[in-house]
Length: 376
Image (tube, rainbow, N blue to C red; front, side):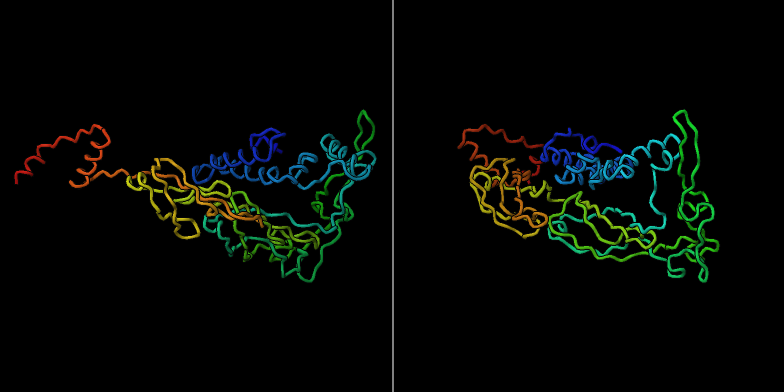
């Protein structure tokens, strides 16, 4: 498994602020909008989001640093057979094909015990306005359901799965191996039943003996205000079907917030452009600026505002996610509109202003066509 810190390009002692900064830079670099059709960039983008979902969260990061996983599972937990036994079991499985010494190590779980289904993950794109206001999406999720024909048994109606005669229902078979270190017993998956402990002699015609069928689930998902690219939403019970009556897994939606044509997001803040005329910039003015979700707002432009100046509109940025107070700010980057076509009166006024300010102005020499036109 790849190291999550290496994926984000940060050292293990990096601060949360540095991790967030590195994540944002990588998201901009590998965003699908800028790498359309590049499968490598899309895969990298997914890995970046997955890595940040763990080490970007202080609690998950602590568990990852301690145990090497986000869910806190400890490879050395439990008693001797359940702890170091698993460790040595993995080692002997690599060398001898499974199991451990004398049957003491590598004992596997009952194949007939209930097990939870696998979690699913899918990406979901939302607009910046949807991310700001929050929204509800109706999704169609391709998923699994218990086969109604056989009730999930996988056997043809009127029949039942039988206990595997090869493994006696254990799902495992033992084999003896002699080595220079002694005699070892290996536990291997039963080849006849595939580890289930059961054999279906007459499979169900609907599901082909799988006990489950593919169906489209319609799910309503509420997306809270303030989400950003990489935010993960859990939809409980919409993952893969459980085994032997175990619970279904969950569905995780990884959000991808699309770019906006007028606003650029930076965390909770938004950036946009404000175009001013030359007189407005020189003399100052009260102008209207477009916000993302609050309509048009009046902004005071100080006299002598230069091209490139940034005006702050407090509280008109993005909402904070999950109950955090307040909103981010809106930053307007000023552009000065220089007219390319002037009336004679406007040109005269500007020329007089230039003389008043002591600036040297050399009007463009009239071409032959303009001179001939004046004669008529």
